[in-house]
Image: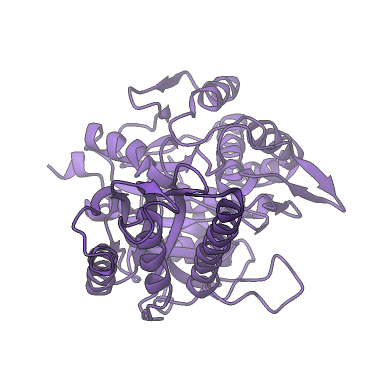
Length: 471
C-alpha cells in the first residue's frame, strides 16, 4: 500500500534527480562553450575568433581597380551618402528588428523589407516560393552576377520581447545584429547607388534569405542557388566586426534524438521499467565530458531537452536536439560518431540496469551544413582586403563560421562572409546589442568591394569573370 508519506518521500527523491539532470545539462553548456571574455568590454573580440589563414598579398590588378573606383566622383558621392544615410539605416535596423521572424515565420518581416526595397527605387523586387526576398539591380549586361545576402530570420521564438531598448548609445534587441543590421545596410547601399546614378557592369542581386538559423537548415539559400545557376560570386553579410572575413564554412550535423519506453508509476514500477529521461541524462553527461579539438575548431551542444509526464511518473519519453560543428570534415565525422555511440550506449545501460529491452532511441538527422573553404588568396578575398585598407580601416582576421556561405562555397562559387558596420555583442542572446558608432564605415567597405567585383561602367572592369560570357 502506498501511503501519502511514501509519495511525499518519493516526490522529493525524484525532484532531486531532476535537479541532477538539469545540472548535468548546465555542465554541458559550461564545458562546450569557450571561456568567457576576460575583458570588461562586451564588444571585445571573443576568444573563439582565431585566424584560419594569413592574409594574402593584394594584386596590382585588384589595387588599381579599387583605386579607380574610389577616385570616381560618383562613387565618392556614394561613400559620403552612406555616412549621411547612417541615421536612416539605424532607424530601419530598429524597425525591422522589432518584427518577429523565427525560422519558418519570416513572412511578416519579409513583406516589410520588400516595401523598403521598393522605396529605394528598385523595380525588380519579388518574393520566391521559399519566402526569400530578391531585388535585382541590373548592370550594363556585359558583366558578372554577384549576390549579396543577409538573412531575415532570427533564433528567437514567437512571443520573445524583441522591443529595442537604447542605453548610453547602445541598442539592445534580440536579432538586431544577427542579421537585421545587414538587411538595413543593404538598403543604404542601394540608395547610395541610385542617388548617384552609378551604372555597374554586372548585375547585383540583393537577397534577404529565410531559414538560416536553427532547423531552417539554410533552406532559403538552398532554394535560391538551386534556381539561380548564373551566380558568379556571393557576399554573405553577417554580424562580423569591421576587418574580419569568413572564408571557412563550418560544417555541422544536427540531430533530434527521441527516447521511448513503457513508463510507469515512480514508486510502484521503480526498478522494473527503464526511464527515458534517466537514459538521456546519462547521455548528456557523457557528451559533456567529450574532449574535442581546438584546431580545427570543433564544438557540440545539447540545445533543447523535453520529456516526461509528471514528477511521479517514470518517463516514457524524452527528446533532445544535438548540434555538432567543426571546421574539419574528419573531426566532424569523428565527434559525430562518438556522440551517436554515446546515445546508443545510454539506451543499453539503462536497459541492462533493469534487465529490460523496452527502452529504444531513434536518431533523426534534422540539419546538415556543408563545409568548405574559399581560397585565402582568391580575388574575392583580395577585393575585401583592398577595400578595407582603401577605406582607411585595418584588416583583422580570416575565420570560419556556420552561415549561408556553406551553400555557394560547396557549389564552387567565390564566396566571402563579411560584416556590415558597427560593433556587436551577445548575438543569439536576449542581451544582443549593437554599438552603431561609425557603422557606415562597414557599408563603405562592403560597397567598395561589391563595385570592384561587378565593375563600374567607364571606370573599372569587373574583377570577377561572368560565367555566361565565358561560354
